[in-house]
Length: 216
View 1 (cartoon, rainbow, N blue to C red):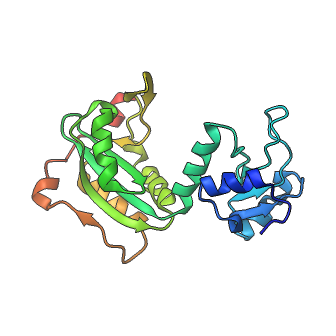
View 2: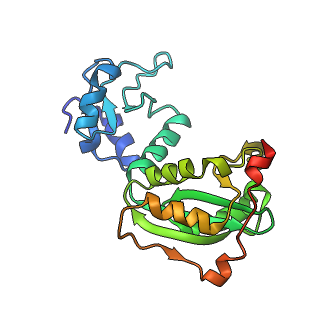
């Protein structure tokens, strides 16, 4: 536990459910000079950092990547991103027949995430269906990133959706067969991982042409 921690900082950590054991005491030092130590000690966040870029904010909490954790909404997004990258989560593949696209993502609960995709009309589709999922796996964000990298040539980059009245690009959509995506999915997860999938007869519907290359 860091002794100099102020009550308001402790309240902030409690609100975001961040254990104090995850903090590295920077003691006012430059983050870059402490980065290797933080990695070695597996510390995801730093305390007693030099003040953030917001004048007179007094913010002292930073992520290992240097993002202020207390500035809203960027701080909350940075914390959520770190949790996805380093925590337990589901990694899934969903498919849309209406758009001939696959979505590869990580989330705390794939059963809840896929209905949200439909509510958002994510990628212009409201018929997303969960095809493959591996549950409660460590480093789910890293696995998602690995699958994305393997499927890079099939990535579709010009599809968007509306969120809070603003157009948002989708960066996790692919045009290829569900079978191919599953192969790369299996290659990216630890050996012995149990992957729940739809029946082959159902998956055969999700065999999409390589539209991504054609759009370039």
